Image 1 (cartoon, protein in one colour):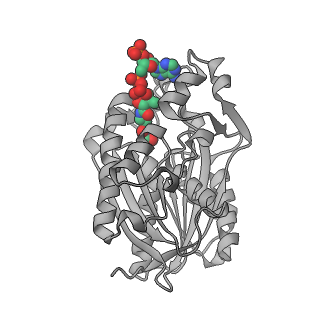
Image 2 (image 1 turned 135 degrees about the vertical axis):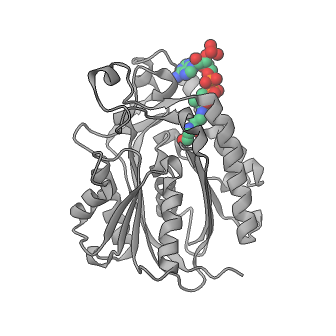
Length: 328
Ligand code: UT7
């Protein structure tokens, strides 16, 4: 029997006010509400304001998680932020969030795990608590993907949205907590989903901007195929590693990229539709924010309650993929 070492004691989320609907996108690129809904399940997405950045959304989600956990800023030992849309090249977005929270006892760091980032952060936080390096850890998944989305490219611009979700972890009590995590990467497939012009390789020059290298590029079909297999594998692995049976799962929260990938993942481990959380229709693909946003919505709406077992599964650029099982 698994004895959890860390548990989630609070969650929070934040989304920008501005909404971009499929019919808004019909006016921007050659697309249709029907195409977007049937291929992805997305109906709308939230878009950050011009002066709203990942650290703003991340800090807002973090403050709500801290209130729900009853944790004060000075108690935080680590702030781990999963994002691929940092405010600046450096320092980390976690450092900006630390300032916004005035959480100066914490070590602040970013993880660039793309859509799997929150599961990477959860695995790291669980390990730090297991190693007794920390007692209270804030993990955040946040993205402002709209700022790196090419609104002239219909193959990507209909998919992405902005948002943030956060969770606080503490040492486990009463058998509650992280039952297991599973993470993988395959860096040889980096070119299928990437943003080439962001770092030192293609710095922002006039030429790189003219080539639109500062935007997300995706080979959708190839990514789709790999995502279906990888998310299915990650779901199977977490059941094997934890000894959980699919009947033990109260809710499956897959990364919200595409309704068809979500359905395929649930099918792979035989989870009925009523135990699968879906909010992709409202937020689109928010990368690292997708799972914590969904987790917070599932908890605050009462769909998940203390004692329930939730399985999280994600896949993203890198490629990266992974899963986690948590008894809340
Ligand atoms: O977050 C983790 C990583 N991301 C993902 O998991 C996303 C993975 N990929 C996908 O979700 C899907 O591949 C998409 C939703 C992006 C695309 O769906 P698809 O069924 O794979 O479509 P497709 O790329 O094969 O495109 C089919 C057709 C093409 O036209 P032709 O060549 O058949 O004439 C595209 O040009 O649809 C066309 N198309 C569009 N049409 C209207 C592509 N984008 C659009 C669009 N509106 N926005």
